[in-house]
Amino acid sequence: MFLHQFTRRGVAALLLVSFLSLLVMGCGRIGGMDQPANRPSALVGKYILNGQSEAASEIELFANGKFVYGMVYGGLDEGAEGTWRGNDKQVILEVDSSRPGQVALPPSGKLELQRDKDRLIMSRNDNDVVYVKAISKTEMDEMLRTVKPGKQIKVDLVGYNYTDKYIQSFNVSGYGGGHIFLSSPTSGGGGPYCCFYYIEGIGFPYEVEVKWTNNASEGPWKTAKALIPEPKIRVPKMLEVHIFQDEHVEVELTDWYSPPRVELPRKNNFER
Image (cartoon, rainbow, N blue to C red):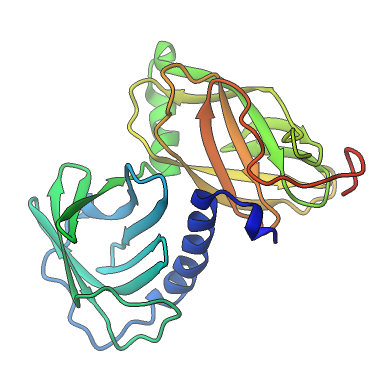
């Protein structure tokens, strides 16, 4: 991997995905802790740090009363798992400090977050850290099936291929994006292809499923989930899909082609 070439935000996201995946794998094995007395189904889901471009953090609350949490910021790599309980005003995360981990535990064994509709607010060092609930792919698919046609926003799909192989085909939640040549220092290698749809006025972030293959007729197809953050521009025209060598994916709504997030040389469209 070319970690030194990632943006700071990309490094944070990559590290967060790595250790959160380890925590999720072990989440089902937490034992010896009482089930939370109150865990409304409306609270279940994934919450993403909002408004911090140089940090990455997620909290995921599971229906079985367990949670995983991770944060990467500067020199801080922090993560935890345990049990949660909540109501219409707050969510309490009880950290299982007995679980071995590769990152530091939070400074407190109990994390208290205030609830504001679909937002969770944590106080850290006299600052409010705000998490926004992500809309799941399942929820978005259902909304797209029932929404009025005039409320669907159409954008082009543009692929960025940082792997070492030509991608013959990819799609985002079933919307085809065509092929993607290998990226260069100035080009992502793909698109634009019509079309991807989202809903006008929808809250962000929300989850999509990205699939890609080097051989569309024989496979195999690789799959990764990604979250579309709130657009930074007023009228998005394309959804960029950045596929990295380690098979993690980043997506973003933009109004024009962004520079590649990893600058990699190539011999031609098909060879590094």
